[in-house]
Image 1 (cartoon, rainbow, N blue to C red):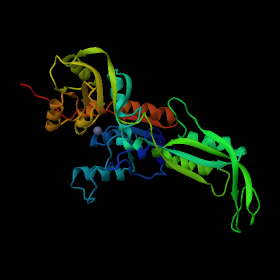
Image 2 (cartoon, rainbow, N blue to C red; image 1 turned 60 degrees about the horizontal axis):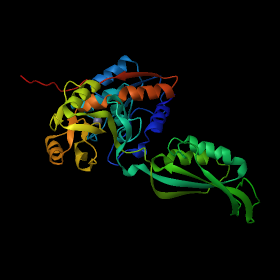
Image 3 (spheres, helix red, strand yellow; image 1 turned 180 degrees about the vertical axis):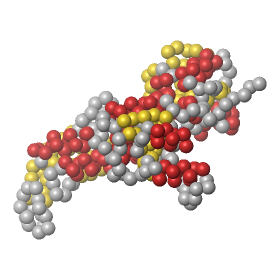
Image 4 (cartoon, helix red, strand yellow; image 1 turned 90 degrees about the vertical axis):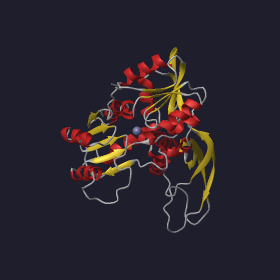
Length: 366
Ligand SMILES: [Zn+2]
């Protein structure tokens, strides 16, 4: 198993194409060809997470927060973060970050938090442009339809709700004239050939297209594969920023805030809104959800997030939205065991270790 194989498996869950354009996901240190026998999963690549990776003899760290966020201007060791990057590179450890792509997929950061809070009927909270879908169309001889369909659907095309391998095919006639440089799969050179073909079409997430087209080209028998990528208005309903869901019953904000603190194992939570307010519909955005306050649907009674600042808290209060800030690490670190279980299931021969990040803040009230 190589570093690239592990990157591909993370990409199956959270394709890099689903990250926001300003994000810096991906492989930040290491060689894609290196062998991996142990992966450490962490929330952030801190000095402590690096030490945990050394102890576990891991060749790779998969984290939610990308190792390099602000581009490094020099590689001088005086700056603590640059020193950490150098130490990781010197240790030959590959670092992969799945950031906003892991914020918008089912099974990612926000699902992990929503599951801890036992929310029901969960759906994405906010729509994102990355959820756009396309139609992939190709033309294939009937003898090779199953082979092409299996390849593109295994790469992630043709998913509608809980159904996979959804596609359509219809017969027709293709024409082509091969020149002297060609080696055609069928027909004769230097004449216009007419061949029976099937028009095969399938829905695909735009974010997954690179892997799907690669699978198409690998499985299709033709020397030159004709295919169309058609933009659609459709979006993948399972993709979106945050999660929305319901509590079992209506309870007060004060009671729910205590439940959140306990469920997330947070030292403390900060609350915007009166304790006796009634809450039932909950929005979840791990990390800094403050910037999204204006777009939170009015049906949401309370937003559980991880890092809200003063002015965003005031904005929430002004629009009557209750907020529970559980702390960035306390909320998001729940994705670590979820991601580790996923990797264990997919990477049978690789050992998977975890580093659970403690909260950086203490609170003093007396
Ligand atoms: Zn975060």
